[in-house]
Image: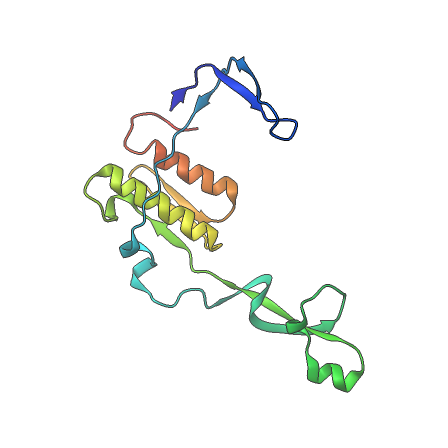
Length: 172
């Protein structure tokens, strides 16, 4: 956590012809997250190879067929059920469920790395990687457990906890 000093606002309007700038007094604090660093040895939970084969109530394009419905317009051609469409003379669409991803719990102390900073970089990389895959991610910290979930707010909360990990400050 650091306090930001003065800065400057810049604009290249219009069309990169010239740059306008003026000093701005910034009254804010910034949280610096650990730099993500790849750590492939800790990428799958409990050493499982095939993850994500559980059905989900959300609609998707790669899960099990839940039902056949009427074409509403906008569905991709690969979702049209061609045999049923030929029988009924109306476009029928396969409605599938999204494949749910198995939740991942990240425990920074158990990750590969020489020091605390390397372990936190690995944890940051894992949080970002699994969140991009829409997999629920949680953190197991010494003083608290953050349950697996998805979403930008959850991701920022976990990154903030990793930024303050090992410090005696209470995070908001």
